[in-house]
Amino acid sequence: MPKIIRLVAIGSALATGAAVVALLPSANAAEEKTPAQIMRMCQRSEVLNGKQQSVRDFNGAFADGFESSNCDFVETKFETFNGPTEKASIDFPNCEDATEPAKVSVAWESEVSQGKGKQITVVQGASGGIFGALSGSWSVHKSSLNMTTESAKAGSRDTFDVPAGKVLHIEFTPKMQRMTGEWRVRIDANPGSFAVNPSPEKNFVLEDVVEGPSMLPGAAGAPGVVDGVAKPVFTDC
Image 1 (cartoon, one colour):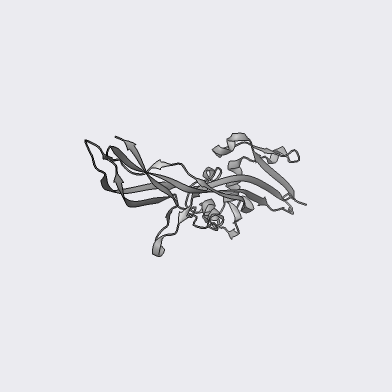
Image 2 (image 1 turned 135 degrees about the vertical axis):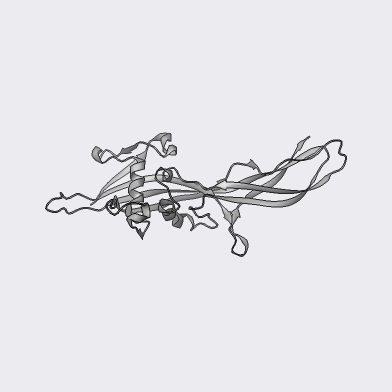
């Protein structure tokens, strides 16, 4: 049976992507790996999420070789939630002795960033690599933004009646998605040779959480926009 080394992030340090990783008591202390080391091994694996890689995929040289045999992201949970509400337009006042409602055309726009995960930022450089591998898992969910895209926008132009003595602005609350899972890295057993000692299979597991906006499909093949709720907010002059 292959020896399983399960890595567990300690406390709140996981959120920084630089957590210290502890091994279970059965593991050899010499094989301890940090999250950064595991993610580097994943990025530089021979097979990443089922795709055969070359060293060029992680900007490596031919002499660098691979650092692991296989790396897969295995999703364990998926959920949706509301993101932070933000002001998405300028103010439209109907003040200065106004006695009647004022009809205004309001253009508003909000940009929502793609989450990079708690571990991916440790090694991610280009738009491909780890993010490209994760896109396959991420995009199986309806209307998900491709993980290689850094941000997406929502916006519209609407007409409102602003009561006398009030100031109007638009607030937008994006709908977000969160995917929890594990990066599973394997180094195959080496039977050894005349000059190389044999070594057993090694397995490492590292938890990760990735967040990003939920998307509405675009019209006629156009890029989608961020799903969410926009509402007018009236305050006193």
